[in-house]
Image (cartoon, rainbow, N blue to C red):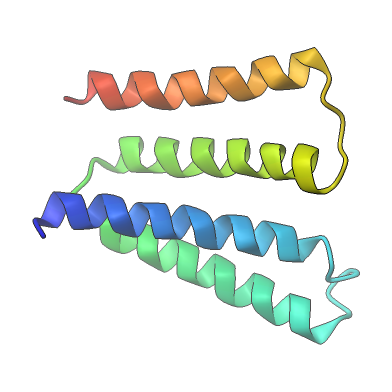
Amino acid sequence: MSSPAFSWFLLAVSVIAEVVGTVALRYTDGFTRATPSVIVTLSYASAIWLMSVSVRHLEAGLAYAVWAGCGTALIALLGIFCFGESTAPLRLVGIALIISGVVALNLSSS
């Protein structure tokens, strides 16, 4: 696997780690519950480390935008589908704009 392709894979795993950490954050009860707190800490540390490795072959700005945008959109979608959060039209428009922005950044970096 070429380095840029592997870097995109690492970035995707980094996004997943960040999303896992954010979902676990919901269950920490102010970091008073050990298991979710450990999951948050390990997930966020892994996400940052994986992103730092991926930017060796990706533009840092593009990598961060993809990481932040995908993470935000995934958390918002999980909130809607798994935690019963609002599906207000404006929220759905916001998610669509995040995804559009990430796609635009990817297209402009080619």
